[in-house]
Image (cartoon, rainbow, N blue to C red; front, side, top):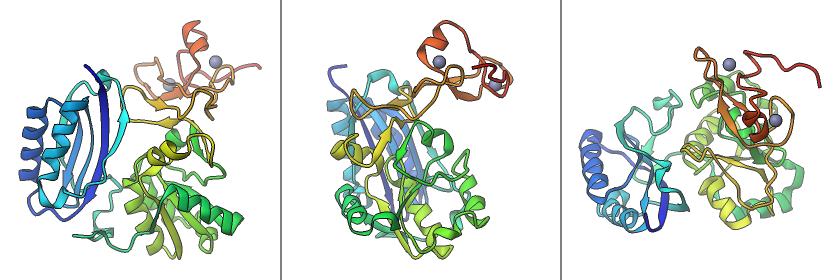
Length: 297
Ligand SMILES: [Zn+2]
Ligand SMILES: [Zn+2]
Protein backbone atom coordinates (compact mmCIF):
# COMPACT_ATOMS: atom_id res chain seq x y z
CA UNK A 1 0.00 0.00 0.00
CA UNK A 2 1.47 3.31 -1.11
CA UNK A 3 0.14 5.55 1.64
CA UNK A 4 -2.26 4.00 4.13
CA UNK A 5 -4.86 6.29 5.66
CA UNK A 6 -7.80 5.97 8.02
CA UNK A 7 -10.91 8.12 8.06
CA UNK A 8 -13.31 8.51 10.96
CA UNK A 9 -16.68 10.17 10.58
CA UNK A 10 -20.28 10.16 11.70
CA UNK A 11 -23.43 11.93 10.58
CA UNK A 12 -26.56 12.06 12.70
CA UNK A 13 -29.42 12.38 10.22
CA UNK A 14 -32.71 10.53 9.94
CA UNK A 15 -32.44 7.59 7.52
CA UNK A 16 -35.79 6.10 6.54
CA UNK A 17 -34.26 2.97 5.00
CA UNK A 18 -31.03 1.97 6.76
CA UNK A 19 -30.95 -1.40 4.96
CA UNK A 20 -30.75 0.35 1.58
CA UNK A 21 -27.99 2.65 2.87
CA UNK A 22 -26.14 -0.40 4.17
CA UNK A 23 -26.21 -2.09 0.76
CA UNK A 24 -25.05 1.08 -0.95
CA UNK A 25 -22.23 1.51 1.59
CA UNK A 26 -21.07 -2.06 1.14
CA UNK A 27 -21.02 -1.70 -2.64
CA UNK A 28 -19.21 1.63 -2.43
CA UNK A 29 -16.57 0.36 0.02
CA UNK A 30 -15.96 -2.81 -1.99
CA UNK A 31 -15.71 -0.90 -5.25
CA UNK A 32 -13.15 1.47 -3.70
CA UNK A 33 -11.22 -1.37 -2.08
CA UNK A 34 -11.38 0.00 1.46
CA UNK A 35 -12.00 -1.94 4.69
CA UNK A 36 -13.22 -1.02 8.15
CA UNK A 37 -16.34 -0.81 10.23
CA UNK A 38 -19.48 0.99 9.08
CA UNK A 39 -22.62 1.24 11.21
CA UNK A 40 -25.87 2.46 9.72
CA UNK A 41 -29.04 3.14 11.69
CA UNK A 42 -32.21 5.19 11.53
CA UNK A 43 -30.06 7.79 13.35
CA UNK A 44 -27.44 8.08 10.57
CA UNK A 45 -23.98 6.64 9.92
CA UNK A 46 -20.83 6.06 11.99
CA UNK A 47 -17.69 4.68 10.38
CA UNK A 48 -13.98 4.04 10.52
CA UNK A 49 -12.59 3.18 7.10
CA UNK A 50 -9.03 2.53 5.98
CA UNK A 51 -7.00 1.79 2.90
CA UNK A 52 -4.64 3.38 0.43
CA UNK A 53 -5.09 7.16 0.32
CA UNK A 54 -6.42 7.12 -3.26
CA UNK A 55 -8.98 4.44 -2.43
CA UNK A 56 -10.08 6.21 0.76
CA UNK A 57 -10.45 9.48 -1.17
CA UNK A 58 -12.64 7.74 -3.74
CA UNK A 59 -14.75 6.32 -0.92
CA UNK A 60 -15.20 9.73 0.71
CA UNK A 61 -16.18 11.28 -2.64
CA UNK A 62 -18.78 8.55 -3.09
CA UNK A 63 -20.05 9.09 0.44
CA UNK A 64 -20.60 12.80 -0.19
CA UNK A 65 -22.67 12.14 -3.30
CA UNK A 66 -25.53 11.20 -1.00
CA UNK A 67 -27.24 14.43 0.12
CA UNK A 68 -27.57 13.74 3.87
CA UNK A 69 -23.84 12.84 4.06
CA UNK A 70 -22.44 15.58 1.84
CA UNK A 71 -21.22 17.73 4.75
CA UNK A 72 -19.81 14.83 6.74
CA UNK A 73 -16.98 16.00 8.99
CA UNK A 74 -14.30 13.50 7.97
CA UNK A 75 -11.24 13.14 10.21
CA UNK A 76 -8.13 11.77 8.52
CA UNK A 77 -5.32 9.97 10.26
CA UNK A 78 -2.34 7.87 9.36
CA UNK A 79 -2.79 4.16 9.66
CA UNK A 80 -1.18 0.95 8.66
CA UNK A 81 -2.83 -1.06 5.91
CA UNK A 82 -3.37 -4.13 8.05
CA UNK A 83 -5.19 -2.17 10.77
CA UNK A 84 -8.53 -3.23 9.31
CA UNK A 85 -8.30 -6.71 7.89
CA UNK A 86 -11.90 -6.77 6.70
CA UNK A 87 -15.03 -4.81 5.88
CA UNK A 88 -18.04 -4.89 8.18
CA UNK A 89 -21.23 -2.99 7.32
CA UNK A 90 -24.10 -3.39 9.76
CA UNK A 91 -27.50 -1.97 10.56
CA UNK A 92 -28.01 -1.28 14.27
CA UNK A 93 -30.75 0.37 16.33
CA UNK A 94 -28.28 3.08 17.42
CA UNK A 95 -25.10 4.63 16.01
CA UNK A 96 -23.44 4.12 19.38
CA UNK A 97 -24.88 1.52 21.68
CA UNK A 98 -26.11 3.40 24.72
CA UNK A 99 -29.21 1.14 24.74
CA UNK A 100 -31.18 4.36 24.77
CA UNK A 101 -32.45 4.89 21.21
CA UNK A 102 -35.57 6.63 22.50
CA UNK A 103 -33.70 9.18 24.59
CA UNK A 104 -32.48 11.18 21.61
CA UNK A 105 -34.20 12.85 18.68
CA UNK A 106 -32.34 13.07 15.39
CA UNK A 107 -33.31 15.74 12.89
CA UNK A 108 -31.83 16.93 9.60
CA UNK A 109 -29.64 19.20 11.74
CA UNK A 110 -28.26 16.39 13.86
CA UNK A 111 -29.07 15.40 17.43
CA UNK A 112 -31.56 17.74 19.09
CA UNK A 113 -30.75 19.32 22.45
CA UNK A 114 -27.11 18.27 22.84
CA UNK A 115 -24.22 20.16 24.39
CA UNK A 116 -22.66 23.20 22.75
CA UNK A 117 -20.00 22.15 20.25
CA UNK A 118 -16.60 23.62 21.07
CA UNK A 119 -13.38 23.49 19.09
CA UNK A 120 -10.11 22.52 20.81
CA UNK A 121 -9.22 26.23 20.92
CA UNK A 122 -12.54 27.14 22.48
CA UNK A 123 -11.98 24.52 25.16
CA UNK A 124 -8.71 26.21 26.05
CA UNK A 125 -10.48 29.58 26.18
CA UNK A 126 -13.17 28.14 28.40
CA UNK A 127 -10.58 26.78 30.82
CA UNK A 128 -8.70 30.10 30.81
CA UNK A 129 -11.87 32.04 31.57
CA UNK A 130 -13.53 29.77 34.08
CA UNK A 131 -10.71 27.73 35.56
CA UNK A 132 -11.84 25.19 38.13
CA UNK A 133 -15.46 25.56 37.12
CA UNK A 134 -14.67 23.58 34.00
CA UNK A 135 -14.76 19.80 34.38
CA UNK A 136 -13.86 17.33 31.66
CA UNK A 137 -16.21 14.38 31.46
CA UNK A 138 -14.89 11.28 29.70
CA UNK A 139 -17.43 9.81 27.29
CA UNK A 140 -15.45 6.59 26.88
CA UNK A 141 -15.17 3.53 29.09
CA UNK A 142 -12.72 3.01 31.93
CA UNK A 143 -10.41 0.85 29.83
CA UNK A 144 -9.93 3.56 27.23
CA UNK A 145 -9.53 6.31 29.82
CA UNK A 146 -7.00 4.16 31.68
CA UNK A 147 -4.13 5.03 29.31
CA UNK A 148 -4.92 8.67 28.53
CA UNK A 149 -7.43 11.39 29.34
CA UNK A 150 -7.88 15.11 29.81
CA UNK A 151 -6.30 16.48 32.96
CA UNK A 152 -8.59 16.12 35.95
CA UNK A 153 -11.30 14.40 33.92
CA UNK A 154 -14.16 12.56 35.54
CA UNK A 155 -14.16 8.97 34.29
CA UNK A 156 -17.56 7.31 34.65
CA UNK A 157 -17.64 3.75 35.93
CA UNK A 158 -18.39 2.12 32.62
CA UNK A 159 -17.14 -1.03 30.95
CA UNK A 160 -19.12 -0.31 27.82
CA UNK A 161 -21.20 2.57 26.50
CA UNK A 162 -24.29 0.66 27.65
CA UNK A 163 -23.35 1.39 31.27
CA UNK A 164 -23.63 5.19 30.91
CA UNK A 165 -27.38 5.49 31.32
CA UNK A 166 -27.46 3.59 34.62
CA UNK A 167 -24.34 5.36 35.88
CA UNK A 168 -25.82 8.80 35.16
CA UNK A 169 -29.23 7.80 36.53
CA UNK A 170 -27.56 6.68 39.76
CA UNK A 171 -26.93 10.36 40.51
CA UNK A 172 -23.18 9.76 40.91
CA UNK A 173 -22.34 12.97 39.05
CA UNK A 174 -25.20 15.19 40.16
CA UNK A 175 -22.80 17.24 42.31
CA UNK A 176 -21.36 18.54 39.03
CA UNK A 177 -24.64 19.98 37.82
CA UNK A 178 -23.51 23.58 38.21
CA UNK A 179 -20.11 23.07 36.60
CA UNK A 180 -19.24 23.70 32.98
CA UNK A 181 -19.02 20.12 31.76
CA UNK A 182 -16.93 19.37 28.68
CA UNK A 183 -17.63 15.89 27.33
CA UNK A 184 -15.15 14.26 25.02
CA UNK A 185 -14.62 10.91 23.31
CA UNK A 186 -12.44 9.53 20.52
CA UNK A 187 -14.03 11.23 17.54
CA UNK A 188 -17.03 13.01 19.02
CA UNK A 189 -19.86 10.63 18.19
CA UNK A 190 -20.50 9.33 21.70
CA UNK A 191 -20.70 12.90 23.06
CA UNK A 192 -23.59 13.67 20.72
CA UNK A 193 -25.71 11.25 22.73
CA UNK A 194 -24.01 11.59 26.12
CA UNK A 195 -24.45 15.38 26.18
CA UNK A 196 -28.20 14.94 25.62
CA UNK A 197 -28.36 12.40 28.46
CA UNK A 198 -26.54 14.85 30.74
CA UNK A 199 -28.80 17.75 29.83
CA UNK A 200 -31.90 15.63 30.34
CA UNK A 201 -30.52 14.74 33.75
CA UNK A 202 -30.42 18.44 34.65
CA UNK A 203 -26.84 19.43 33.84
CA UNK A 204 -27.18 22.95 32.55
CA UNK A 205 -23.83 23.96 31.15
CA UNK A 206 -22.72 21.16 28.83
CA UNK A 207 -20.16 21.35 26.03
CA UNK A 208 -18.90 18.69 23.67
CA UNK A 209 -15.46 18.61 22.12
CA UNK A 210 -15.90 18.87 18.37
CA UNK A 211 -13.98 16.18 16.50
CA UNK A 212 -13.07 14.52 19.78
CA UNK A 213 -9.61 13.68 21.05
CA UNK A 214 -8.45 12.91 17.51
CA UNK A 215 -8.88 16.51 16.40
CA UNK A 216 -7.64 17.92 19.70
CA UNK A 217 -4.47 15.84 19.36
CA UNK A 218 -3.84 17.16 15.86
CA UNK A 219 -3.86 20.70 17.17
CA UNK A 220 -2.34 20.50 20.61
CA UNK A 221 -0.73 17.07 20.88
CA UNK A 222 0.64 16.64 24.40
CA UNK A 223 1.30 20.35 24.79
CA UNK A 224 -2.17 21.24 26.05
CA UNK A 225 -4.61 19.66 28.47
CA UNK A 226 -4.32 16.08 27.27
CA UNK A 227 -2.17 13.46 29.00
CA UNK A 228 -1.16 10.02 27.81
CA UNK A 229 -2.18 7.72 24.97
CA UNK A 230 -5.32 7.52 22.89
CA UNK A 231 -7.04 4.13 22.83
CA UNK A 232 -8.17 3.18 19.29
CA UNK A 233 -10.39 0.36 18.07
CA UNK A 234 -8.15 -1.25 15.51
CA UNK A 235 -5.05 -3.39 15.62
CA UNK A 236 -2.90 -0.47 16.71
CA UNK A 237 -4.90 -0.30 19.97
CA UNK A 238 -3.29 2.99 20.98
CA UNK A 239 -1.72 6.05 19.39
CA UNK A 240 0.48 8.75 20.87
CA UNK A 241 0.52 12.40 19.82
CA UNK A 242 4.27 12.79 20.24
CA UNK A 243 7.35 10.62 20.76
CA UNK A 244 7.65 11.80 24.37
CA UNK A 245 4.04 11.00 25.33
CA UNK A 246 3.87 9.35 28.75
CA UNK A 247 1.09 6.81 28.96
CA UNK A 248 -1.11 6.96 32.04
CA UNK A 249 -1.44 3.18 32.01
CA UNK A 250 0.51 1.11 34.56
CA UNK A 251 1.78 -2.40 33.97
CA UNK A 252 -0.18 -4.84 36.16
CA UNK A 253 3.06 -6.63 37.04
CA UNK A 254 5.85 -4.08 37.49
CA UNK A 255 3.96 -0.77 37.61
CA UNK A 256 5.88 0.86 34.76
CA UNK A 257 4.04 3.30 32.49
CA UNK A 258 2.62 1.47 29.48
CA UNK A 259 -0.20 1.90 26.96
CA UNK A 260 -0.21 -1.85 26.14
CA UNK A 261 -3.40 -3.80 26.69
CA UNK A 262 -3.02 -7.53 26.22
CA UNK A 263 -5.53 -10.34 26.53
CA UNK A 264 -5.37 -12.53 29.61
CA UNK A 265 -3.97 -15.89 28.50
CA UNK A 266 -6.64 -17.79 30.44
CA UNK A 267 -8.99 -18.99 27.68
CA UNK A 268 -11.98 -18.59 30.03
CA UNK A 269 -11.04 -14.96 30.70
CA UNK A 270 -9.36 -13.21 27.78
CA UNK A 271 -9.95 -9.90 29.56
CA UNK A 272 -7.73 -7.00 28.49
CA UNK A 273 -5.22 -5.81 31.06
CA UNK A 274 -2.16 -3.55 31.03
CA UNK A 275 1.18 -5.28 30.68
CA UNK A 276 4.45 -3.68 29.60
CA UNK A 277 6.62 -4.97 26.76
CA UNK A 278 9.24 -6.37 29.11
CA UNK A 279 6.86 -8.26 31.39
CA UNK A 280 5.15 -9.71 28.32
CA UNK A 281 8.40 -10.77 26.72
CA UNK A 282 9.90 -12.31 29.83
CA UNK A 283 6.59 -14.08 30.41
CA UNK A 284 6.48 -12.77 33.99
CA UNK A 285 2.80 -12.06 33.57
CA UNK A 286 0.47 -13.64 31.06
CA UNK A 287 -2.74 -13.65 33.06
CA UNK A 288 -4.75 -10.67 34.29
CA UNK A 289 -4.67 -9.52 37.95
CA UNK A 290 -8.14 -11.00 38.48
CA UNK A 291 -6.90 -14.45 37.49
CA UNK A 292 -3.48 -14.16 39.12
CA UNK A 293 -3.27 -11.49 41.85
CA UNK A 294 -0.23 -9.24 41.93
CA UNK A 295 2.20 -10.32 44.65
CA UNK A 296 5.06 -8.60 46.41
CA UNK A 297 6.61 -5.33 45.33
ZN1 LIG B 1 5.89 -4.58 33.47
ZN1 LIG C 1 -7.93 -13.19 33.45
